[in-house]
Image 1: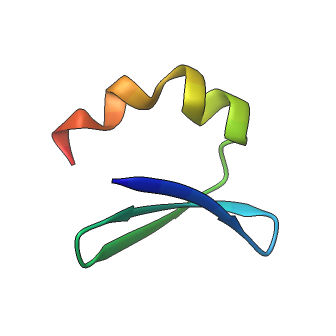
Image 2: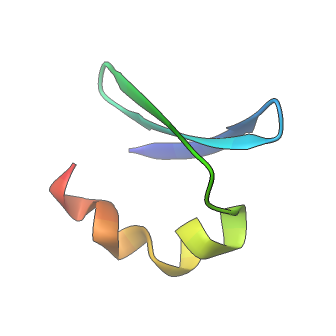
Length: 38
């Protein structure tokens, strides 16, 4: 799983899936264990 910014938004990439989120980068980094189910 990778996290990166695109157009000011945080994108979560996992294999062939892409998720854009409105959460801030810091929120995602602090809570990235929530995404283990992805």
